[in-house]
Length: 132
Image 1 (cartoon, helix red, strand yellow):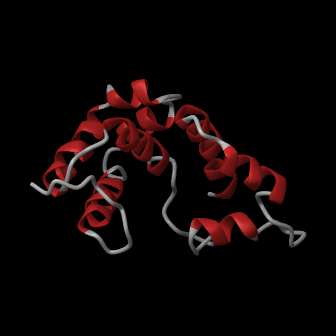
Image 2 (tube, rainbow, N blue to C red):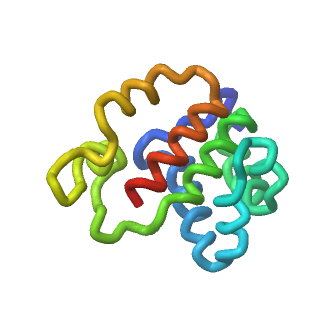
């Protein structure tokens, strides 16, 4: 096992495992629903779907269980790409029918200032809900 923490960089093994796990949630929508109803990392950690993700990535590096739980909780809220293709930054910056950004500059700056993981999770949950 690597002595480094998991790093979800583009095209990394961690990202491939995360995408496979996310796609597997389509086969069991009940588990996706359980994760989508979670309000904090403690609730996510008690989900069997989270533990499947944890098991699939643990051989790739050291785990930060708190961070992985929050990633799982956010990823479970993402819908498959449809009309809103592009990365999350592009989706946040564009997309309203009037041509304005889906996430205002002020809201984005507030997200960047959040230090507490639970508050960031809540803020990102709202953003993802607004763009997917």
